[in-house]
Image (cartoon, helix red, strand yellow):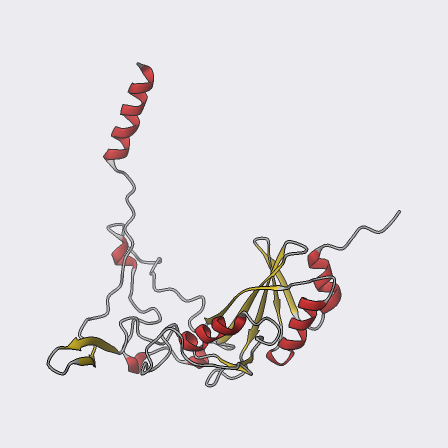
Length: 240
């Protein structure tokens, strides 16, 4: 009897096991590679007949600072409301001198590439971490998938991840004079400056932030009489 064809996960294990980390969760596959091997692995995934990931869907940055930490206090909270369970100490809600420190989270910055194989109708998440948190650098994949160009610029703009070999790496979403990278976890949620148009000066001016940071607390409605009334009216209408 002929051997059954390998599953897609088995193909990845057969080709990369022992060299890179391969994971499957919620029906999604992730291949994590070292930054120095990214371009070689990317070419294999694109060109090898077993994979044929010819389509790049997205490239995004991730900041793992404070990953796994929460600002919800669930041990000694009362039953009087959700706001009593929030400490307001999450990343982005702090004074600058009390900001989270990068050394609290090893391998802080990652670049994640989402790939699609049209031939096999399969998807893959390709992740690589920057070796240096202070100056995160990963290789660009624009030569392999040209569509990565703008995605890598977004990741550079929002997270400060430098894509080595990118043909035109510059900001794409924030203003020309913007300072910092707004999607980093140690960037204040209220920002650093306010922008407004000054009619007297006839130009846009930057000023210190005047709002106070606050914690947005979701409210859960457990019982609403409107829904009960709607159900009773619907039942009465079906009985007639």
